[in-house]
Figure 1 (spheres, rainbow, N blue to C red):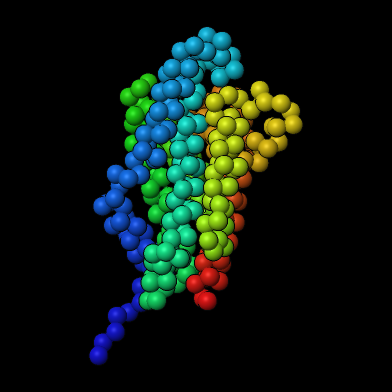
Figure 2: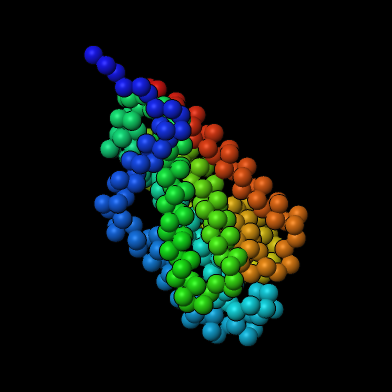
Length: 267
């Protein structure tokens, strides 16, 4: 009787990503509205519609470019964060409790840490794919200020991955839905979308609100994406600071997710 050799560590992660890709190929239509059409509607409503009313007055506040060009990289980051939040809540709980696919994976030679990394890897791949589609649409609508929009896409994937790692770690501790995920969307994701400089500069907010925006990963991602796509007065020190903040969140979230996946799947 022969036995199959266990996959290497990287191969095990790739197998988890392949599982999600196989499922997505058959069911991608169900997520198109939330991942592509929703941010596109925001772009049309605010960038094209609202932007046509404020362009002349807002030119000084948005660095002298059109409001649509100023808004597009921020919406790219928002789209990545919202998609990452969704992919890191109910699908994670389902993997533990309802579909129990994580238990099936770890019944073989794949470790819980590989499952966590595979899940986060799949989220990053999906963010890159949907973000690329959104970027093409933005360019067709005239919202791309130059080739820097491609760098903005990479920043959006990094921002979404950092948020996904943190929420995935939290989701690994949730035993029942019980409103925990709804609270994340209502009290974290939506306020973060509104007050992280997406639709207007953070310095236009009241002084007591601005520190809340500064701790938001979306604000750091928006500033980086906007600096790449539009340029402006962002300094090198600020760019390094934004990038370091997102990388720290990504590493901390990933380590926590691996440990919490291991603890839960070892029961």
